[in-house]
Length: 106
Image (cartoon, rainbow, N blue to C red):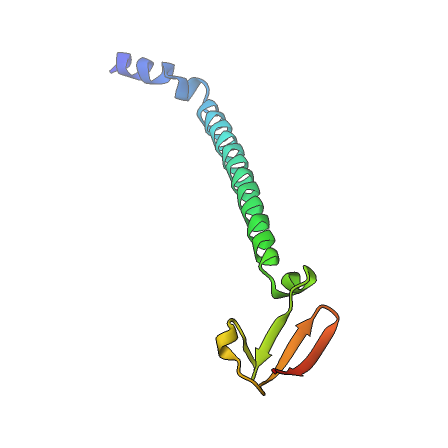
């Protein structure tokens, strides 16, 4: 019994009771730093991806198309995509970068 008591009393838990707690605190701090770093990396990746998507969306914008010199032609509020959609006498609306004009197809 005495030997068992001495063995238990000589264990590091009784010699340094706070050592295990300190080790766990260090491990927790290390894990928190890893998590923060991973979150920052993921945030930067998503920010870059978001910027790329915004740039694509901006490039496909009808307003950007008009700014490049194109127009948007509509008949009855619907965009005209082919000459087959028009016939002589149709009233159309043409949107330019600086305004709109109406016209009649001849």
